Amino acid sequence: MPIRVLSDVLVARIAAGEVVERPAAAVKELLENALDAGAHEVRIETQEGGKRLIRVTDDGEGIRAEEVARAFVHHATSKLEDIDDLQQIRTLGFRGEALASIAAVSQVTCLTRHVDEKAGTLLRIDNGRITIQEPQGRPAGTTMSVEYLFGKVPARLKFLKSDQTERGYIDAMVMRYALAYPTVRFTAVHDGRMSLQTTGSGALHDVLVEVFGANVAEQMAPVGDVVTTEGGGLDFDARAGTRVRGYAALPGASHGNRSKIMLFVNGRPVQDTRLTFAVVQAYHTLLMVGRYPIAVVLVDVPPDQIDVNVHPAKTEVRFRDADGVFSAVQRTVRAALLAHMQPPEPPSVFQRAAVGEFAVPAPAVGDSGHDESRIERRSESDPVGGVDRERQWQPPLAGSEAWDRVGISRHGSDRPAFQVPQSGAAAARQGNRLPALRILGQLAASYIIAEGPEGLYLIDQHASHERILYEKLLAQHDLGAVTSQALLDPLPVEVSLDGAAMLEERLSWLAELGFEVDGFGGNTFLVRSVPQMMQQDDIAAALREIVAELETGAEPMRAEIERRILRRVCKRMSIKAGRVLSFPEMQALVRDLEACESPRTCPHGRPTMVQIGVVQLEKEFGRT
Ligand code: ADP
Ligand code: MG
Image 1 (tube, helix red, strand yellow):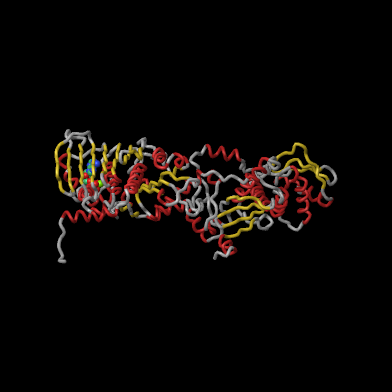
Image 2 (cartoon, rainbow, N blue to C red):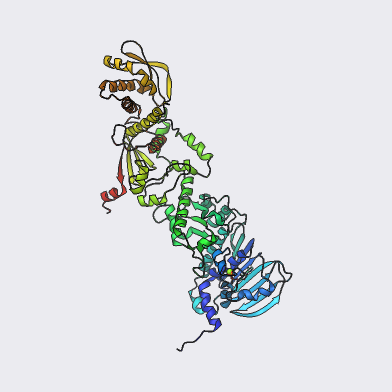
């Protein structure tokens, strides 16, 4: 065949395929035009899955009579003036291609009236040719009817699916715009049956109820500052930088594929594998394999930070700072999830322990006040979640790398909630500190089983409590502010004769350690007050430990002797092995341990925990 230049009509038909490949794509373009025209109400009607008819009616500003025909010319747009505008796109449309493309492959009837004009216009275009243009009345706004889409393009028609399937695509499209524009009232009617209607109340959550149903909507947690910026649409502030908001379903509600991860960039529904992945990553280890999040995530970036002119359908965007946007999405969604998830129910055995024989008195796990009531109170006063919820609930196992990437920082805290122990730069920065751990249970009434970023942790309850008490007492002592409690009945304690002499000399030291002790004659002493954390049962034993330490006499330095005394005292004070702990007790203990400078050893240098890494577990199970 000779080379020839194709006719305009043929060119238009070929080009149309890029923009409108199926009815839902035409719906998308018509919706965008309605929204760009400032509509408050948009009605979508279809017949036969949009193949027979698509009609979009809006109450936007309308098209001026003299411009109606021009709207259907290729590259005709009122939304771009010069090349610089391409950097600052604030409308959904800008290519001036949609109407021309649709009109090239269907019969379009446009009835429109501009707000400033008295008369409206009726324009008919039959597969690219204007057949009727005449004045006709209507309220301000526009109705675009598209009939027999691809009626003259059999190749395209052949690829369309059943009416029902095409209808599904259309509904999905309408839903997306309804989510992006909560202030607009959307109605979708297919073959006379209404399939979707939103209120236009402006509250995104109202749209969620319509789109996902009340059950799912109920389980969706606000992401970012969605509450204050629910206006939706092209709602961005160039100075604000990247902003992420929306709603994300808590792990209790999930979906079998990624189709319910809905992403919007500057009010524009987009398909973006990377951002989708960012959302999936935010749920890392929270969802079972094969389950996917349900989420509506609206990303707002200054318009000059994105290129929306990547694909004719404008469903792809390029970010200048793709990594920054990725991590903003992942971080914000994850933070929202952690803030709103309830702590896991402790297994019933622990619940029983908590209310039963071990409930009272609570062990003196420092003065940290990690009792349930306090946690409750805090979360109430902090409805958005924030710090304390995050501390209550900790995400389960994750590979350290992924964990590192999540890197959620607890606002107002000096250390991130998740730390990767002993790995690379993080370890250097954080030293010996512990990551946040999630408690799984207790083993042999002696070890707390917990899960952390690097795998399994078995924590020796006695040794760790020693560590916690030691650091607390030491800190108080170094500040010269050991809080001690006076005993109601001073406790007489008998010590060895040698020890009594040494004790007599050091009573002032002991006072600084929180022990107020008086001689009572002979080798008996009266203990009047003890460090606040100490329990009655331990007092006599602690004093004997002190004496035993003094008797060793090996260390001349006062500071060192004091430390040794403290270590011995803490050993006495700490929770014994063999004690069943309630879930809150374990939580308090582990939280306090996380706060320690050197959580991995007891004051005597023995390990407080055994850690089994994921890699090692995989080896043990022959997975590598
Ligand atoms: P684009 O949206 O990229 O500008 P379109 O081909 O979709 O290109 O539309 C061409 C022009 O027609 C728009 O720029 C707008 O001025 C006008 N237009 C289309 N639909 C509407 C509508 N529903 N209300 C008002 N004006 C419209
Ligand atoms: Mg358009």
